[in-house]
Length: 268
Ligand SMILES: [Zn+2]
Image 1 (cartoon, rainbow, N blue to C red):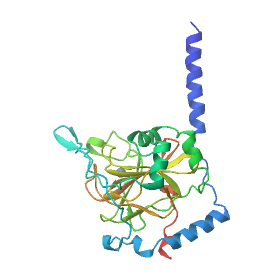
Image 2 (image 1 turned 45 degrees about the horizontal axis):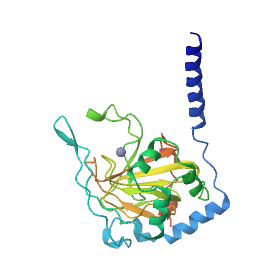
Image 3 (image 1 turned 60 degrees about the horizontal axis):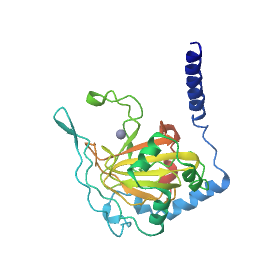
Image 4 (image 1 turned 90 degrees about the vertical axis):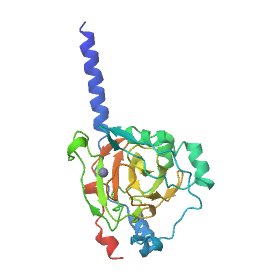
């Protein structure tokens, strides 16, 4: 009979040890070549991309994917968690082939990356990318709003806010926080609207929700600072904002202290 509590204790201890290994490492100082890379990249992002004028926005996909059926959940008579209009590029070309080979772009791809460790194949696919943990602020002209944690009121008070909200007018460009691989760019996650999910070096991931449209497709590699979507209010959002989440191997973290100062961007 003594064996049962011992076995339980062993399982709990194993879980705690595994969990402690999942804690994020201290932020890395970027190597010189990475620093140089970031500067070069910023020069490739036209200044007008940081404005909120949609007409000045040069990127448009060749074709949009067809609409998904409207998906709404109701709670207490209120309509909650609607998907919003799907506006994501039709997958095509090399990136599309890569995505189907690697199993990217599915609803389950996003769910997996949001809750557990990425597959080894996916870790290998991002092993060559910039390991700098610091993130470029994803909406260069946006305002940081609601932060991370249990800070909600009303019917959502029991739910932790798993990211940060960045307010900006609809159509404002959203840029990739780090070099990454697009793992998901679609509209099937309840409440989040049009979503981009990027996978980064060492299994970190960033998540961009409520976009009015996304401009990248699964299997595509993106550079830090590259425009990947535009701010909107699809999904459960009452005003245009970016809901941004940051994870390490499925464990959600507070991104606020890991953003690079925005003065660097403004001075360019
Ligand atoms: Zn949010």
